[in-house]
Length: 78
Image (cartoon, rainbow, N blue to C red; front, side, top):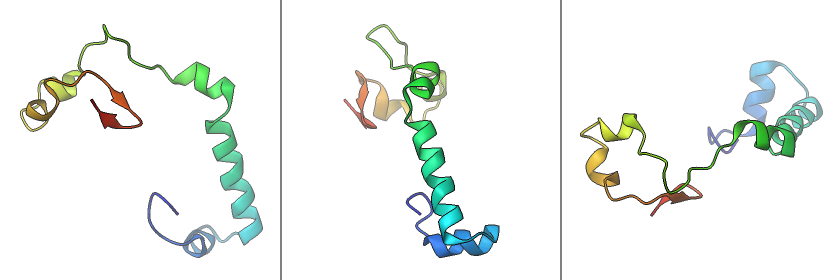
Protein backbone atom coordinates (compact mmCIF):
# COMPACT_ATOMS: atom_id res chain seq x y z
CA UNK A 1 0.00 0.00 0.00
CA UNK A 2 0.99 3.64 -0.32
CA UNK A 3 2.32 4.01 3.22
CA UNK A 4 4.37 0.84 3.34
CA UNK A 5 5.09 0.36 -0.34
CA UNK A 6 3.94 -3.25 -0.06
CA UNK A 7 1.37 -4.82 -2.37
CA UNK A 8 -2.10 -5.58 -1.08
CA UNK A 9 -1.27 -9.28 -1.25
CA UNK A 10 1.01 -8.85 1.79
CA UNK A 11 -1.87 -7.44 3.83
CA UNK A 12 -4.13 -10.27 2.70
CA UNK A 13 -1.59 -12.78 3.95
CA UNK A 14 -0.87 -10.88 7.17
CA UNK A 15 -4.53 -10.54 8.20
CA UNK A 16 -5.70 -13.77 6.55
CA UNK A 17 -8.50 -12.05 4.64
CA UNK A 18 -9.72 -12.29 1.07
CA UNK A 19 -8.88 -9.54 -1.43
CA UNK A 20 -12.51 -8.36 -1.56
CA UNK A 21 -12.79 -8.15 2.24
CA UNK A 22 -9.56 -6.21 2.51
CA UNK A 23 -10.54 -3.85 -0.32
CA UNK A 24 -13.92 -3.16 1.32
CA UNK A 25 -12.22 -2.47 4.65
CA UNK A 26 -9.69 -0.09 3.11
CA UNK A 27 -12.43 1.79 1.26
CA UNK A 28 -14.50 1.99 4.45
CA UNK A 29 -11.59 3.52 6.37
CA UNK A 30 -10.76 5.97 3.58
CA UNK A 31 -14.40 7.04 3.31
CA UNK A 32 -14.50 7.58 7.07
CA UNK A 33 -11.32 9.65 7.12
CA UNK A 34 -12.52 11.84 4.24
CA UNK A 35 -16.07 12.33 5.52
CA UNK A 36 -17.28 15.80 6.49
CA UNK A 37 -18.14 14.60 9.99
CA UNK A 38 -14.61 13.38 10.68
CA UNK A 39 -13.01 16.37 8.98
CA UNK A 40 -14.95 18.98 10.95
CA UNK A 41 -14.50 17.13 14.24
CA UNK A 42 -10.75 16.42 14.05
CA UNK A 43 -9.03 18.63 11.47
CA UNK A 44 -8.01 22.09 12.63
CA UNK A 45 -6.16 24.25 10.16
CA UNK A 46 -3.68 26.76 11.60
CA UNK A 47 -4.25 30.48 11.17
CA UNK A 48 -1.81 33.40 11.11
CA UNK A 49 -1.76 33.56 14.93
CA UNK A 50 -1.03 29.88 15.49
CA UNK A 51 2.38 29.56 17.18
CA UNK A 52 5.05 27.20 15.94
CA UNK A 53 4.77 23.79 17.60
CA UNK A 54 7.03 23.43 20.62
CA UNK A 55 8.33 20.11 19.23
CA UNK A 56 9.83 22.11 16.35
CA UNK A 57 10.74 25.32 18.15
CA UNK A 58 12.56 23.58 21.01
CA UNK A 59 14.42 21.10 18.80
CA UNK A 60 17.70 22.39 17.34
CA UNK A 61 17.46 19.71 14.65
CA UNK A 62 14.26 21.19 13.20
CA UNK A 63 14.08 24.85 14.18
CA UNK A 64 16.74 26.20 11.76
CA UNK A 65 14.70 24.85 8.87
CA UNK A 66 11.31 26.10 10.09
CA UNK A 67 12.14 29.37 11.90
CA UNK A 68 10.80 31.57 9.08
CA UNK A 69 7.94 29.26 8.13
CA UNK A 70 4.65 31.08 7.54
CA UNK A 71 2.50 27.96 7.19
CA UNK A 72 2.07 24.92 5.02
CA UNK A 73 -0.02 23.79 2.09
CA UNK A 74 -0.41 20.06 1.52
CA UNK A 75 2.64 19.38 3.65
CA UNK A 76 4.81 21.92 1.82
CA UNK A 77 6.11 24.53 4.25
CA UNK A 78 6.08 28.15 3.07
